[in-house]
Image (tube, rainbow, N blue to C red; front, top):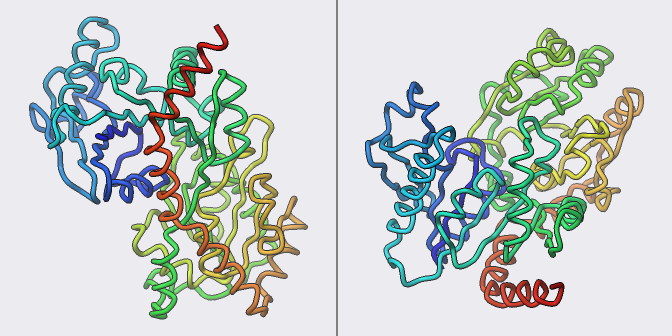
Length: 397
């Protein structure tokens, strides 16, 4: 099978489940990864100007990384032009595989925005990796809702990171949605711990106790909670590592501005995935502090950072996410500032070596290698899944 993976995430940006799975899967199956073609609205951007005229592909991390060309960008306002631009991209992707047109083509779609490319690519099989509750995110439109329903109706394989999200998908269309939970690059963390890596210089100058967070800094984080805890406990050092997302919404967040003003809250920015273990292994506790508002995607979240935290063995305090309640006993849950202060006080005084070993043991069973093996087996079964889907559709009609 030749797999064309379409995702909105820049491959060299923050690594999430798409890159983790596909980079490993590509050791066995040819994979081209693309974020789609340029749009006419991109023509003034430096990246557009720096791109080649016709586009190119680059081998990287086992996949073929697509770099679209400037010629014939998409123009959504002009239907025929846009259709021609999409068709050209699809031809480029098919031509990129060394096996040519003999092998079946799989469209591995990570967002409904790519449905127009599916139409042009005409894949033999369609996979929908729904990694988030898109309908509850900014920018969701009626057009995207229609595209997602089309994906759900046509996909031979549908999966998400949580049972709640898969249940939601199955409410939208008559389909089966499987679950492939997030994991961690646990072996890298274990090896860093074995080497007893030193703390990075920007972390070494921050005194203990250090309370860590690794992930995107966005408006769905309860930054007001961190600001209040830092005020109550001025000796606690909160170390937040990750790119800032949300633009004006984040800048307008009072909690974010309060954190920036606190001397014991350290916003270190994004760090390369290869050095993240060096930070995590020198935290005294790690936290997950999302807002749990009724319309938030966080209700169905299975955080990427969960098993990274567990692999380090350090205590973890989190809001009470339904998807990770199975780890109660290894994770402490808290709701409200008082409960958080109490839970973190307990975490920072933990001396139980057996708990650390249990956390690492759970993480060892939740590696990206384990998840990739499951996905690879599903892909092998795509012909059977296609037959079952068609049989079910026929029975309904």
